[in-house]
Image (tube, rainbow, N blue to C red; front, side, top):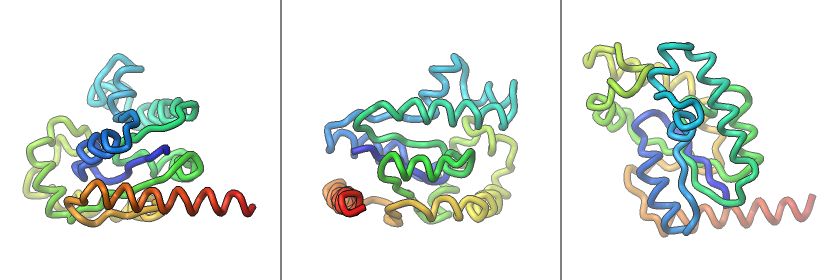
Length: 178
């Protein structure tokens, strides 16, 4: 099974991804970590030195490098599905999951992490919720294409595994009938 976790910054993609990968006994990857490893620079440095367009190109190249891996859970960057037709590509490669907690939860989590988030580092705390809502509104068209949407802040892994297995079975069945 190949599982791509989508969602806004602070949604919990890495946290849930690690637990899910452990439960499925498959590797877990964080796309941002893979990008930093390939580039030998932090995401913040990549943004500062080369800008967002360069970062998005590198992000897509790194994402596509997973095409040869048979099974994994990968936590994608918040913008990954929104660029370079990545959403469609990931949906063809595996199962996509949008982790969609309430905006208030995102804001609470992001306040303490802003310095590590290039797109939010300069946003004052009192404007953070508005910025999150605006960016989320821009990205919802991509996120909503996911095979599965999780709205719960804490979903039991066994329930998530069952939902993913149903989707995998449906995809296998529809591919056999095509």
